[in-house]
Length: 456
Ligand SMILES: Cc1cc2nc3c(=O)[nH]c(=O)nc-3n(C[C@H](O)[C@H](O)[C@H](O)COP(=O)(O)OP(=O)(O)OC[C@H]3O[C@@H](n4cnc5c(N)ncnc54)[C@H](O)[C@@H]3O)c2cc1C
View 1 (cartoon, rainbow, N blue to C red):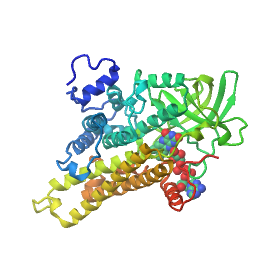
View 2: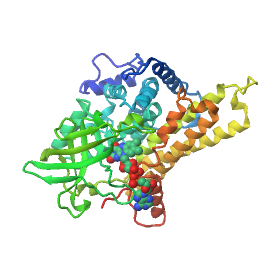
View 3: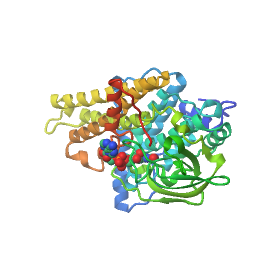
View 4: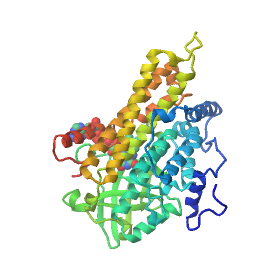
């Protein structure tokens, strides 16, 4: 335990994180009751919440044997463990509620904020935790095991902070990093458009028209994760009259409260419901001070690691489902025999296959994060695209097989398996979509030029 008053010179939010790491927080909030339900639905939901919480709490003792974790520096280990604890003790208990209501997981974010984890990827000289890619993916994976939507939206927030670090001026870094570290603000990544596809070459229709003090931004975006829960939107478009993205691609921070920002609460998806990925129309002014980078400068940013966060998120879902079902077969009797299902060779084989898939995906993820840390762009692009593709496939496969192994109960809403499966379905289609990942990997393995994402 830290002494009262914490660590001198460490901001209060980060201090709280340290206290959490050292076991300074004993209270566990099991409830997520911010959304309204009918009494019957409420009871069903409460059961589902408890099942989700129990699923993650009942981590088997041989967990370490299942998925050995790579050696980490003590500080990184504390970060990953703090996230795991929040996910296990709090997020898992709330996940079914947010899923049912398609509501943003505000309480999870309050916990992340309180623990200082919103600043996970903010550089240390700006008061953040400065997590390296390996620490980042392992932290995100743990968050996903508690709540998929929290992990996916957190990845959007962290991705934008990376862009600010790469493209922002010193004044912008101070401003936006401070907003995260000191005020706990959230940032959304706003690129996708209804008229375009990320699959081949992304064509932006959102226009930045120069004005006296900056730009007028006009366009419609969809799949805007964090929806109306974001404080800032990192909106991308092209400058008026530019021949293409290379010449005119530009992004700006737009405050949610800015006039001319209209959130259309359209999100009603099969999975990842808590991401509230609404459609947002922009017809608004941005000041020069809020424009991040010069036109076309985003092309200088290393995007080779872009999909790492997706790989971690979808693998986290697979791991949660695997641990749940492995624990289930160890305790559920093979009626009429009192022996648990785990004694059946058929079940053993199924568990072995699922466990091998998850373990292989974990090894790929760790290798991809290490490639990113080593700094070789092509090696990173190869490993990250392999990892994203594989994690997303393993997410779908393992959650589905876990449901089958659970039998008819597998499709019940009172168990978390069907929710994990629905969330996993988003994995293969998220850009870079899995077939695009394979194309990139294939090109690199054939010695051809490749890119993770391309703009026209
Ligand atoms: C849960 C979730 C959250 C998201 N959050 C965000 C967010 O916060 N911010 C954001 O900007 N975006 C976000 N996205 C959107 C995402 O980035 C995509 O833009 C979105 O999914 C649109 O892709 P699409 O599959 O609908 O369309 P398309 O890319 O058009 O794909 C449709 C189909 O056509 C195929 N296809 C298209 N072109 C080709 C081609 N040339 N060759 C072969 N096949 C082709 C594709 O492979 C696919 O099968 C999110 C998506 C999801 C699912």
